[in-house]
Image (tube, rainbow over all chains, first blue to last red; front, side, top):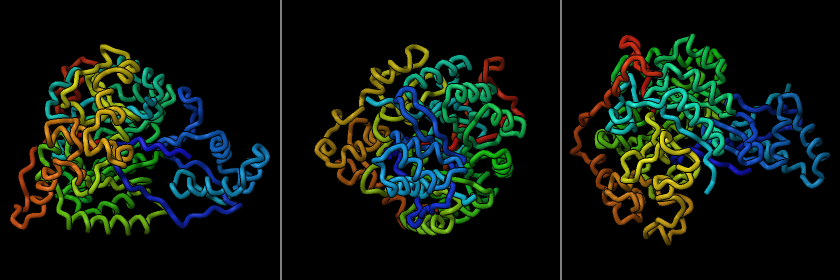
Length: 109
Length: 385
């Protein structure tokens, strides 16, 4: 996950170190975040008021499944089907990092 | 050379507020010949072609542009993430609904303190109550809300109350930005610079609030660089990720570089892509080749990029010096003296402030032109970062 801060200055932002995600959670993008395609860079990017995350193919696939309907367990299974080389733990860790940054919200239904 | 991610569109420097911490340039009158709606449309399209993904609409007070809804709609149609940075004073319900329909993604509303007397005094005009109402409107219309607060000597002791206010209005994010000393803030630096004890107390409050509110509100704290050992990584490097277009079409790598002795670049004269790639204002300090010692051989040179060129220029008269904030800078005494003065027992309680003027009104009939005087009671320029 390539975090690209685009603000001008050094900030310290909120992170939530103790956050975890469970298999039953249904992650969705937070309201202030948008997933879009960058024509210039030919990749999906996640946009936030002050930051851009340039996504690789797997990251983009995971986030497209974060629609508030798929559970974490389903996302992990789907990614495992698409990419045999992506370990389940990495998918969970990616989701956990985004929840900790409040870019993803989780609800269990 | 990378493509820029963000465009800061400074639509106007006119502003109904008069905050002494404003980072707008001192020579506001030189920026009265504002870009037209069509010119902004072209700038936005060129920015998208260049790779820009985020468009921050700021000023001055962007709501003073009568064509703001059109500009937002254009930006949205081009696929940009649109972020309005406003004092919110002109954010009436109809205007807000139009902006929502035009696709505005995010709203940042400034507030000067946690209660009306102090907030209005810093803003230079009665504004607190309308800001609070506008914050409610933003939430009601389903936008994410960021509350922006520029911190300085006159309000930093209220940071706990400011956070309580942000919580009360349902902010999703709050940006607590220690003042950076450019433009009017530079002119007022000695009155605005807080003491070390004030900063330490504020940091305790911020840490505790983050813990308490971590499931509800993002708290961003912009560090006070005069008190740091190392400089901020200003703009993530000169002309690296962001660009600024001023109200009259000048292109800058940041919102504070107006006064640097570099040749002017304007969207009225050249395409944005050529300016980004070739103009001296962009290339002068891009990368690390320009660096003097101690930056040149410093292991941190790609972490902080030598700090801020504008700050080096303001403090030393030479934009190519190491940012004097850095404790390794040969000019660090310039910062140390200001800090020492801010902490001296003999310092007067309140030094006089020079409020920024509202800016020059444009002649009526010009697109995006002057508001009737009765409506010029709106927003403040939140300091850009």
